[in-house]
Length: 207
Image (tube, rainbow, N blue to C red):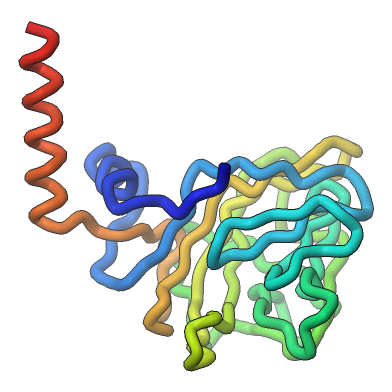
């Protein structure tokens, strides 16, 4: 079952020092570990809901479609859409340019290279190493009634040996502000208090 990462989960990750923290309206889906089948159908993904489809027909409302273990990427996951909602960060502005593999802390925003219109890319391993984690940056037109352009990242492991790749998780800032690779929501003081009380309760039960 796919679900939006709660602030509690994000706070736990922050306390463990496993991610960068930011003060922004960041939506994150962590530890999803969605398989990218080594097939032409691949997996279609809706970044706002976490919904997936492994069918050739794609996914209504879907944003992107990774195929062949991550060898290829298309932003035509919703075959009924008239315009794409998703554009990955590429080495250039052509729809056929390969993807950038962004490092932690790199700011994703309008200054990076995005293409326009429907398109895909093949041989994503020009900048990614098969079997190793990397980060795809993206822009996303949100279904918020305002067509807000959000920026975010996807953590992936691509494979080129006919085995499935993995979409580990992703995050985006729904205000339209730039977002650093690896950034997740910062815990509020109230959430930190909740975590502290929960830890105290666990200790008391064990004693």
